[in-house]
Amino acid sequence: MVTEMITLKLERKFLVDIDKTVKEKNYQNRTEFIRAALRDKVDQEKLKKTMQELAHLKGASKKVINDDLIEKGREIALKRLEKRVKSVFQDVGI
Image (cartoon, helix red, strand yellow):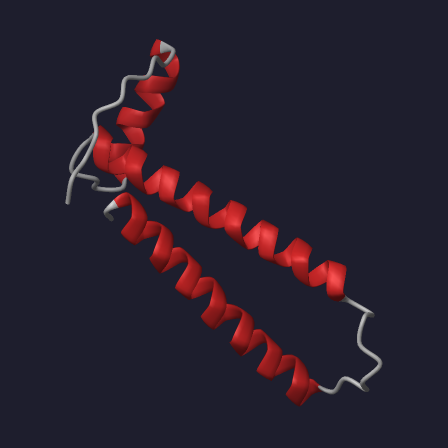
């Protein structure tokens, strides 16, 4: 996996909070914690986008929707989201 170094500046108080979390949650170091936090944020944004796309489609179908169709749709959406997430991770080398 190829990684790139980036530099970021953080307020001292925020860095103290990060160090506390790293220790409490047993991360190996700050970098591991920050990577995990960034992955979580990317996942949240992708989920948010997918939910917005689904909301846009709400009511577009003239079909009668029942619980089985909802569950099937949920499974399909989650599989597609999983593929997107895996693709992004592969693109960034994770």
